[in-house]
Image (cartoon, rainbow over all chains, first blue to last red; front, side, top):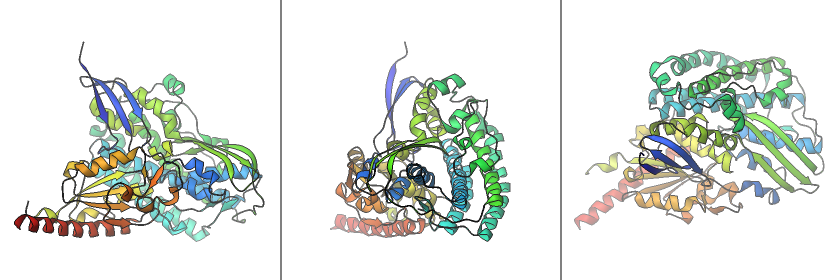
Length: 359
Length: 146
């Protein structure tokens, strides 16, 4: 019987931008089991609902994660709006959709860069992040912030994007599309990249369901799930197809995310064409009382917001189920039986966001 | 080892930040901001590092990790706390698991404020750190001579 050894991986590791610890049980070079332990980024921010009032909590939820910060603020606002029966003006819904899709593009580009870094393709990492800077510039023009921009409020949004700014963004995105095609072509066609991705980290359709995977991880295993199809914000007015892949491996996940970048650009184009001219936010009076669930699609998958209010300015409870948390069981599945050298790559294919997971 | 102060190596660790400062630090190493033009290079090994960039506050789990990384780094070393959370605990100060800023565990030389800290201010912090590292290094050398 080959000798077994346990290798600690993390929390401080060159490939990990964020701390997570894995105990890898190895048989020679083969990983037999991976045991994750988390808690390095745990802050306990859900408990802040008892210390900060429900309006201030928008800013706290935005800081659950700096990558999908906009969508966290949006999810929380949607939950409180649901409790208070606030009808959000359509223009605010559209603006939220546009910012959310821009966040998706920036998040997927960030992931592509980190993936390239994980298999040692540094110039590709730099190219992806160079393209991502254009999206951040657009955030800065429209909101003033680059990664955390606090434009959500209960009942709508705080800032408007005038028509000429929106048209300017569409033309920037149109120009970007050509560069994006050139960069993503390397991910999809280069044989060195393919040799690291194809057939690595297989998650079958059955396993994906059994392990409760979400988002691109699920869609790359051929299952059509996307919370945007439930029609929150302005998604019910927008025409888009779900992107899935039958590959079930790391290459499939890469394809799904790349296609989603182009899909997001298309969604923004449609939203800019259809955006109505209304108020930016509805008047919100009184305190929330009751409870609500909200599900929304973040770049990493489905996020789940639960809020319970008691009629005072402080909420009783807030709970967030974030996509990376749901994808961790799928990660331990894909790590079983893989090569030790593929571990960093496989951790990255779930697009981990540890600060979301631990809050 | 005479000219070591000219090109210090940089180590980044994410304490309990929200990722915001974290990705901005990473963005600083990419072509648009390119902090490496000041002679620093990013490394993943604490034992190779001279400048320690840390984002996010200190919680009960990462306290030991931060202290360990600091102790593994060779002398002289410079610690830069990036972002409001790393400076004081920031918006999470009242959370039950946050002890406060990085200076509750290790001595901090340079504080970079901002939520999230902007790449320009991070670069500013790094440039100051390079200067301070040079100073510390020269001081140490004089100490050896005397």
